[in-house]
Amino acid sequence: MRTYFLTVITLFLFLSSFAQHSDETTNIKQLRSYEDSLIMLGKAMVNDTEETQRQTSNYSFIKTLVSALKIPNSFLYPFDSVKAVRIINSPDNRFRIITWPLTFDDGSYRFYGTIQMNTGGKLVMYPLTDASPDIKNPEDTITDNRKWFGAEYYWIVPVYSPKLYYVLLGWKGYTDKSTKKVIEVLSFDNDKPVLGMPVFDGNGKTRKRVVFEYTRHASMLLRYLPDQNMIVFDHLVPPDPKMKDQKDSYGPDLSYDGYKIKNGHWVFVSNLDMRNEPENRDEQLVDPKKQAKADKAAAASSNQ
Image (cartoon, rainbow, N blue to C red; front, side, top):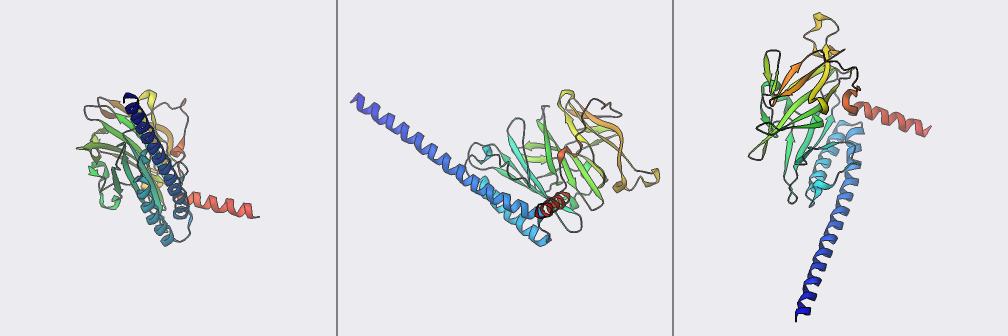
């Protein structure tokens, strides 16, 4: 009898393990299939010459992405072959953010994205709704995922102050004349995302997020230096003091400023010595319009 029960238990464990492995294999196959669809839709929403077609591809991309994320344990799947979006995980692996821009024929952008939580089970995500035109004073405004100051994020910095929060560095294509970058803050209140926090001190003001605007013809450095606990960025100036109100004329003057973390706040510092730091301008972000032109040029060259 004892041998019989041991045999039954062993068989049960084997079948459970086999079923779990079978489910995981099925999930991976589904995720790969979704990834293939996302790759094709992503290329279309970036490269199609018709604005309406880019929009249609974008809507299909969103639906496909949501279906993919509903697959169990999708958080562990990197989707790293989908080049049309930027996916970054928080260093503590609590969540990941997926963001991307959609370009319009007039040179403007709208951003899309979602925050996916690492639940280890059922999908929990917070879609990001770009409400940039409605946020009149972004440096003074606290919002949430339903009223998002859209951007494509490329860096997450956790800050372990009395209230844990995350600093996000992002690129924000703006118009046909200027580009923006943003230092955003993400925190969670009752497990719901909050965007913006009064933690940036400098020049006689405390900001809830920091927004930079500069000419589209220039590149701007905005990065985090982990060994110094500092965010550094180009100092932006107009080409002529008379143009100080024309942000679309601003560009780097080869000097650098930054924010240094102190007691949970970021304190502004100017004239940083960056001679020993590599300049990774724009954090290797590529303007979708420029990328589309490059892809067309490459295709034309290969056909010759």
